[in-house]
Length: 430
Image (cartoon, one colour):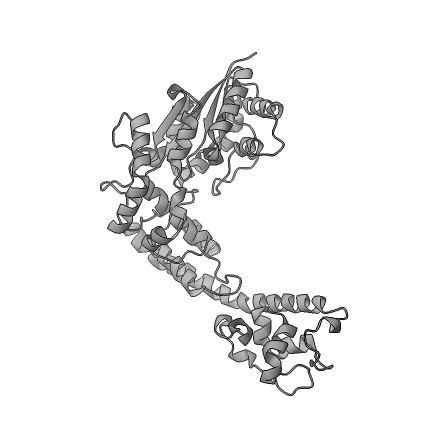
């Protein structure tokens, strides 16, 4: 049986894992000709998109209810692809437990495969600043970074130390390579290739590659997105789609350097107390006790807000893009609002299409009561999404609200309603 070395790249998250995976996908055929396997990669990799990596299949199998060792052995053999060297990569693998890693080690032992695990560890605050930007772009975050640290659960997701401990519980220190991301942030692909011995085989066109990468936000872009998120708070369906605008901003200026947000001393103290012991554990185990990994380094470019001439020159462009997006967004709000109201009417009509009179909670409801007419003539009830019959019984009857199209005027002027949260029907107050 051929002996193979399998390099498992387990992340960590937010350390350029997607960049490495995208690059390996572009040269997978070239690697094969040099007796290296990078199987299960995309046939048409997109260097501008994040990926889950080839190791996602391994993660899904290990966490599946129908897991079997036979299926695991077959998958690992497919990763190896008949070559003497193979790479499997996914930051999802950083979520594996010691039990999962033990199963992998046992499978590779049966298959005569040597395992080397690679993990890039990132300093805590730079990691969280990246996570914060991600939440601004994808999850409508509107708080400052310091408020986010104080109140959100997301800072607990710096789990690099937990992931490394899980790996170290199974594999010997000689089989684990832990690399400090901050030292290799600008050449993470080259550092990975050199680490596994592919430096000579796979040359990197750094300029061409970096132009396609999804960069971090500039201060202007971050402020624009925060403003959009704050303005859209409470709107039905989150009308302001931050990710769409963020993509427009980032990919229209791919060469601009991102700018780091500022972290105050209170947040620094909070995060140091939370993660200081984990950071020390990593340094003691993998860096000889030196202060390599940190919660925060008060030097270099970490956590220092810098405005370069390049970003200053492109601030106007960012504002122009945001303005054009906002105008387009306004033009589509009316159509989306109509669509949403129509869907609510359809639900009400379907709900009461059958004989609904026996369900009426009050015999005093008039025979001419028309459910559809009631919500159209009292559109605050429609916008609130509550049961029209229940509302009429609890409030509408006493308020003298119109309930059929024989009424001359609607009970509520729909045109005056600009905020559904401030015009809720009285049932919400009972």
